[in-house]
Image 1 (cartoon, rainbow, N blue to C red):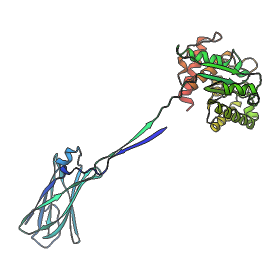
Image 2 (image 1 turned 135 degrees about the vertical axis):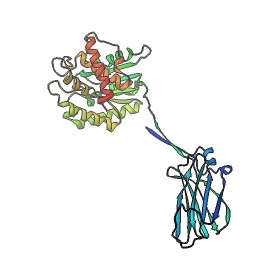
Image 3 (image 1 turned 90 degrees about the horizontal axis):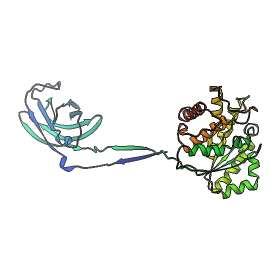
Image 4 (image 1 turned 60 degrees about the vertical axis):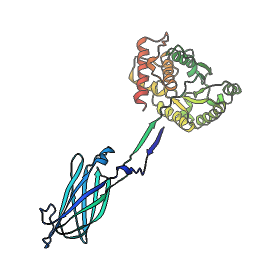
Length: 368
């Protein structure tokens, strides 16, 4: 979330810094710095000297100074020479008469100060003219773009609703608890699962015990796992009961989370349909989706030495459930899977290290 804040001061008038600049006008013949075609030999010269001290005190740097004079249809300009504390120059070859003088001081393309007055040039005479330069608004603006990095609180009580994909290998819920608590001795979470072979979200919604458990359990998070093929065989039914359960979960004060399951071992193309259905549910219901199925597919193609499936090519091996628990850890706890120290007996250290590294890399890079 980005919050835009503007701080700007306007129209600051610093009266004691406004300078009365003395500009001497002399007439008579002289070397011309700006040639003017004129038959009149009695032309005048305007020497200009401007103190830049007031702007220096404001820590403003003048990058250009320009003086312009105009009379009738004639107009001439001259860039002034800048030194550390002054701007100097002259405009010569001016016919006697009243000329309009303008002076502009620039910092980059911005006009820092401006002044104008009328000057009458007399042949053979010197005139003193007071020109007040008004310092423009030199205050700037600061646009602060704040990136709020809001960390969701760690769920303390998590309910899993699913089927055999959730209860295999002593239960994903228990392995998730072991994984989380292995990273911090002071971190404790409570988990529970309602599962049964082949159960769908429709079955769960129509079960009064499940409804009562959701409403009365004081859960922080309820995880929904659909029957493995339902999201691709009957997407409409999946989305319908996902929405009904989400409404019940919302009524209880908890948050909904989806457990994206994996393709069958012998048909990895299923992951496209499964991903699409689960992500659609998450988007429509503003719920998190833990992309376990996508990680299954990646590991299946990347490392043939790790078997994520049991012999039926459908249910998870211990390695598969461990991978799922790491995904839940990194998604829900928002921490690095490589910090996990829990190691089930069925896994080797090498297998666990590979899976932890892969999950962390996925969330850090590939999932973006």
